[in-house]
Amino acid sequence: MIAIRAATSADAGVIAAIYAPHVLVGTASFEEEAPDSRTMARRMAASDGLYPWLVATQGPEGTGILAYAYATAFHPRAAYRWAVETTIYVADAAQRQGAGRLLYEALVDTLAAQGFTQAIARIALPNTASIGLHETTGFRGAGVQREVGFKHGQWIDVGLWQRELAQPATPPAEPRPFADVGIVRG
Image 1 (tube, rainbow, N blue to C red):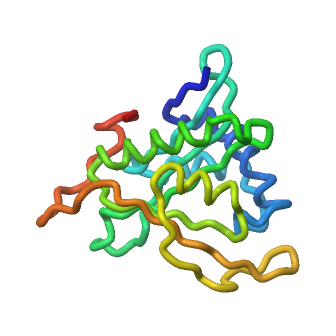
Image 2 (image 1 turned 135 degrees about the vertical axis):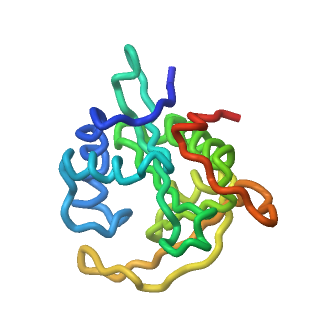
């Protein structure tokens, strides 16, 4: 059975290992050097309790991490604070087993409960699996940035996918910290 839980700093090594192939071999990430567990733990801590980091696990007591997903600020300017950028990475061995969908649904539901109104995902193209996952969880294409990344000897387009999380209110309430909301499912 797949379980969803909040990621902890103890998960940083496994999260870094899931991410590394996307950095070193693939084009899903535009980083060129894979971050180590300390760097990943710092990134997790930088969420400052506002943005969730979640993991999908399987096995005894949730020890086998299959995938991770998180949100960050969409843009640093204050007027954007109701929008988030979302990211998900699934371990190669866990691809197409449903962990990514369950995890991303939990992330989206949690962000909506926190009071964020829009989720934006950037997908290096082509990537039919990621597009499928995003569209299955309610994201819709919002545009393409042409040839914005150069990696492994090629120029790469980035597609933008967007999902409305909640109807924006006027004036909007401030987003609530992840610690105050916890993981929301459905």
